Length: 219
Image (cartoon, rainbow, N blue to C red; front, side, top):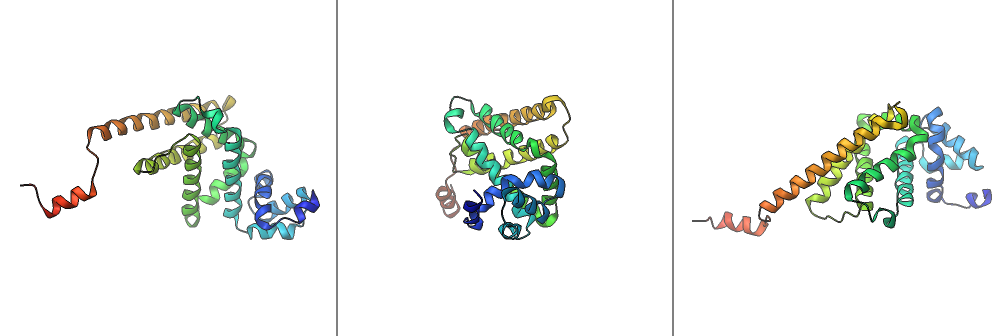
């Protein structure tokens, strides 16, 4: 195993290290000390492991979040979600992400603090969008119009708010987080229903028709 790891490229090592980093980042913070500990656990040269992330804490967090995306899809393949209603699919996907992060809540708390820095805020928004996109795609969403963007923006904000509750939830079985998530998902579903009704009431917007009316006003 050690020999196989030694032969890997830095890109191949990244997802392997990413899954070990949070267990050390919870104690040592997101930095080279956590990378060194993960390298020791794998039995590889810490100097090589450090090259994977180049000391970039956000890159470490990014890699961990990417591993959560991947593990979520492994636990919830299409056939497992197929018989669920959309609301249940989204709730299950979010809850699965929380379950995956549960053993590393302190690492997640430290990651959230890092991403809250003004300089890191754009990257944090990007990672939130990626998570929302992964969940909607897993739920079977194939929208390519403005719905693609509104769904992800709304779910991203709900996921971020749920994480904030999750990080401080001391209730039994995370009851407070689950209740909060249920209320927010209800809000998403109500919004989607209202939006669909409004779209049905209005004729589709035609850029060519609009431009034509500007050139040739209705008399």
